[in-house]
Amino acid sequence: MTIKDLAERTGYAVGTVSRALNGHPNVSPKARAIILEAARESGFQLNTNAKQLKQTHSNAVQLVVKGLGNEMFGEMVEIIQNQMARTRYQLLVDYVDEDLNEVARAAQLCRERKPLGVLFLGGSNQSFLRDFAPIDVPCVVITHDASNLNYPNLSSVCTNDYEAARQAVETLIALGHRQIAVIGGDREISDTSRLRYEGCLQAFREHGIAFDPDRDYKGVRYSWQNGYQAVQALLQGGSRFTAIFAAADVMAIGAIRALWENGMRVPEDVSIISVDGLPLGGYLVPKLATVVQDADRLARRGLEILLENLESRAEACHETVPFRISRGESIRDIRTEGEDIHA
Image (tube, rainbow, N blue to C red; front, side, top):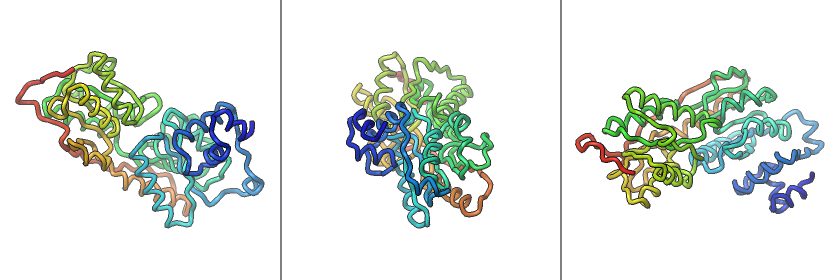
């Protein structure tokens, strides 16, 4: 199969297909995802030229971003790009859909582009266990804890997702909420989603709060649209709640819109708290209550560790960056009123 064949299959121009396959930034996330998935399904392999085949490594660092619509990752990509511009290295950026295997993609990019190192934004331990072994260059995964994988060339910088979710739900419980719905991600493909879900469950257990995951949990993609759809599904499925914990700010923002369309005000009728601390949340009405991750520190420290490994072949290291809770305006104390359960 040629690039022309792939263009005919996907409906995109040959130039767009070529740019997507070569990791150029001026391709929409949607087009890139469709083209890369079609290439994977057809077994398409991009030919490298003779110069690439002869060289041992390029002078590039490869950044693999898991998730096409993750606003926090978009912010971190910009930080990394600005920092990399001050170094002697070139930065290559590649996006994969959150349902796809980011490590298999990185292994392919290592074969084709021969980067000196790889940065991952987001990841899954299962993907690393299955597909990381062929990658022999220094790597750092950001926002995901890889300490228990014990790869000598894999470092990580993350937030404690389990504790962040537990404390967010604890905040709701302290305000008198006992009927709490949860909007999270796919726990099978995202360790972040799994840990945040488990943190929620721990808070419920500590306070003896019953939780029905079939009725009161929706695992969706990290986007505004899916947060909106999750609330619609919760209401249609009979979930009754005074508060919602959303695993990401983008989900919470979509959820607020869905609540409004169903005649519910935030926080007067339903409180909502989430995780990430996107700047946008501070400009919403009401201002979003959220667990603030230090995106700047995560991105900068992840890149620093990778550059240190490139310069001195330092040993792998694993760091956890502190978070803080911003109470915002989207949560309300109902202890003096009793629970007014909405559905």
